[in-house]
Image (cartoon, rainbow, N blue to C red; front, top):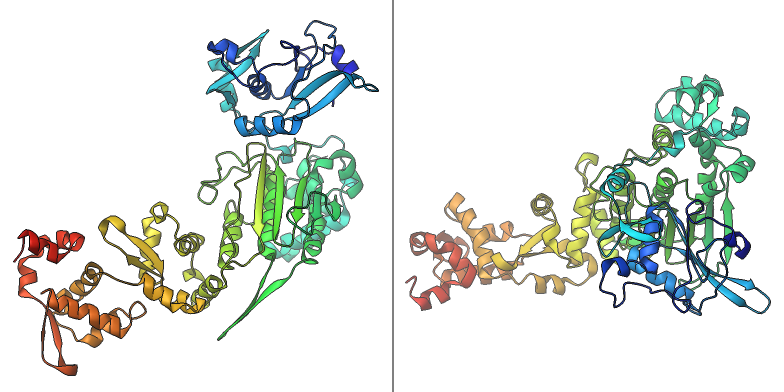
Length: 584
C-alpha cells in the first residue's frame, strides 16, 4: 500500500504509477460523452485496463504528474469507493484495491484516491471498448500487434517445479515424507518403496533435483514454520459462519502445515459441523451427508493443485450450514472455462505438484476430480456445483448442502445399485437426467446421451416433431409420491402412440392388447393403452378381429396405402388431412 511521501517521489514508468489531477480533481469513469476514441480512453476504465495489461500498477487521482508529485486533492468518488470498485469489476472483470490517502491525516485535508490494479493472468489481454490498451508516454494507445501476440502466446511457467532457493532437505517435515511414502507405496502397489531413503524418494518423484528443493516439495512436505515464513500464500483458511448473510466469521482456523498432513486435519474440522439426511424408503436405506467427503476433498485438492502461487492471497474456505464456498487465487487453467470444465482436459498450472498428488492417489488424473464433484453432488439430489462467480483472477466454487430433491437421489440410487461398475451411469448421463428433471433446455444435451437414456428406459420422449421434450420415467415419480404428475406429463398424443406401435406391428404383423401393454410397460397403464389403441382403430390406423382376449390388431390397408403421408399426419393429425381432402 502506498503512502503520500512514497508517491511524491515515485517514477511513473519505473514504479508503474499513473498520476492524474483531472479537471476539478476528478476524471471520467468511462468515455462519457466524448466522441474521439483517443479522448474516450483517458478515463478510469481505460487506465485500469492498460495498467492490468502491463502486469499491474496504480492509478493515483489527486496528485500532479510533474516530479516531485504535488498533492492537488480530489473529491473523486468520495463516499462511494465500494461502488467504484464494484463497477470496475462489473465493466472490466478486473478487481482493483481502492483506498484513500490524506496529506494531512489529522484534519483529512489533501485527499488522494489510489486504485491499485492487479496483474493480468498469463496469456490474457484486457480491453476497453473492444480495444486492448497500453500506455505510451502520456497517451493510451491500442496495443501493438507485436505486444499483443507476445502476450497471448505466453506459457504459464510451472511454479511448483521451480527451485526454492531458501529450502534444504532439513526444511521438509519427516512425518509428511512418511505419509507420502505410505500413500505412494499403496497407490503403486509397491511395498519396496517404503524401504527407500527419504532422499531417494524425493529424487525419484522429482521433488528434489541435485540437492535443490522444489516449490512443490515445500508446499506438500515443508515444515510449518518454513511455509509460514517463505510461502504464506500456501495457507488455507477455514472460516465458519452461522448464516449466509453474516459478514464476520464466528471461527477461523489457518492451516500452514505441509499438504500431506493438512488435508486430514482440514477435512476433520469441516466434518465436525457436518450432518446428514437419513433416507429410508422401502428397500433403500442410506445417509446423504450435508457435505460429501469425496466432493470436499476433490475440491480442496483441485484448489491446491491448480492455484496461482505467484499471487499473495490464501485459499479461503467459507463453511455455512447450507453451503460451502472455496475461493482460490488464479483463474481456470489454460483452455478451461465454466462452459467446458467437464469436457476439456486442462493444462495443470502446477504440473509437478499435480503429478505427485496423482502418483500418491490424492487426486485423479486430469479432469476426473471435477467429474467426481458433479457426479456425487447431483446424485445426492443437490444443486449443481456453482462456478459462476469465477473470473480471470480467481476460481470460486459453491457447494450446496441442501438436498433439494430426495426422490432424485433415490431414483439414481435405485439405478446404480443394480448396475455393474462399468455400466453405471456416467457423469454426463446424470447431468442430463438432472436437466430433464428441472425442465431445462435439452437441446444442448448430446443426442448420444439422450439416446442412451431412452435405451435404458430412464427417460421418455414427448411432443411432436417441432416440440419434442423429455420427462423422467415413471419410477422417478413413484419416489416423489406424485404419480399423478407423471400421468399429467404422460398424456401421449396419437402420433406418439403411432410411432411406437406401428414399428412393432411392422415387425410382428399382429398383436394382442397384452402385447401393447408390455411394450409400454412403465410408461402407460393398461387402461391408457386400451384408450389409445381404440382411438387408432377409430382413426382407421389399425384394424381389429376377434373378440375379448382373442382380439388381434393389424396395420390397416388404408394406412399402408397412405404411408407417404405418415410424417405429415403425425405433425398435424389425420382428421385435419381428411378435412383438407388430402386423404380419404
